[in-house]
Image (cartoon, rainbow, N blue to C red; front, side):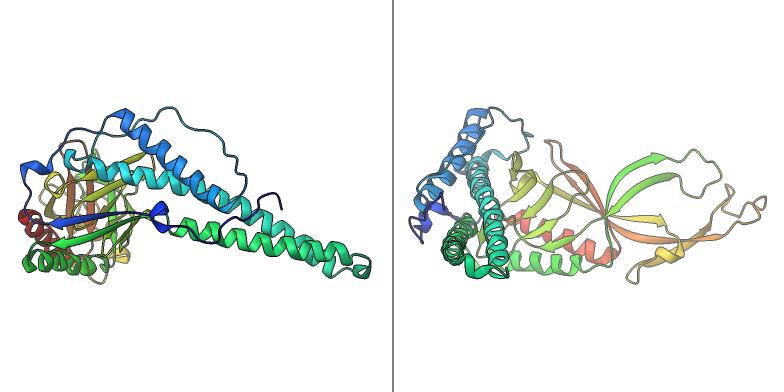
Length: 353
C-alpha cells in the first residue's frame, strides 16, 4: 500500500473548532469591520492546509491538486458575524480535502476487495497462496486507513455552544423551535419563484405564479454542530436558510455563504388567496370561497364557455423573507395558522436580541 497509516487517532482540536455564543441583547461592541476578500481567500487556503495537515498525520505521503485563486461571493453577511463566516469557510475547505481522500481510499478499498474475492474464489486459488496473503494484508491496511480518514471527516466541524443570559431568552428560542416544528409539518410548503400579470381577461386569476414544493426541517449544515436545535428552509432557486440561536446562515455553495444577524433578516407574514384546483387542495388548507374558470367582471360565470367550471379559493400563509442587502424569498404554506404563529414567534425572539 503506497500510503502507510501513521496514527489511528487525531487530536480533535486540530480537526474541529469551538465558539461559545452568549444569547442576549446586542451591544455596539458586537460590531466589527467587514471581512475583506483577502480574508475569505485566507480562510479557504487555511482550511485546505488544515485538511492536508490532518491527512499528513495519518499517512506518510499525500499529494493534492489545485488551489483556487479567486472567488466572488454575495455581500449579504452581517458585519458582526464575519469571524463566524470565516471559520465556516475554513471548515468547508478542510472537509473538502479530507472528503476527496475518503473517495480515493474508498475506490482503492473497493478495487482491492474485488481482487481479493476474485483470487479467493478462483478454482486455481491453491496456486495463489502468496498473492492471497498479500491481498489480505493490503485489504486490512486499506480498511484501517479508510476508517481513520472517515473519522477525521466526521470530526471536521465547528462546535458552537450557547449560553443564554436569562431563562427568558432560552424559553423564547424554545418557543421558536416549537412553532417551526409545527410549521414544517404543514401538508405543503412552496417556494414561489415567479409571478406575472395574467393577460387573459376572462381568467379568474389576475396573477400567474410559479411555485415549487420545498422542505422545511430540523437540521444543520454538515460543518456545524451545536448544543441547541437549528432549523432549515429549503430554497428552490437560491441559497438555503439555516436558523441558529444567534444567527442565520444563507448557504448556496461553500463559496457563497453569508452569516446573518436576526436583526438583518426580516420575515413578513400575510394571508394569500389562491385559486386551487380541487384535486390539489391539502387537508390542512382552508377554503374561503369559489369562482369560475372563465368569469365575467361581476364574478358570474362566462356562459360562452361550455366547459366552464368552479374553482375553489383557498387561504395560504405567506412568509416573505427580505434583507436590505438583497435577499428576497417568498414561501406559501398550506396551513396559514401555522405560518402566522411561526412568524409571530420569530418576531418575538428577534425583538429580544
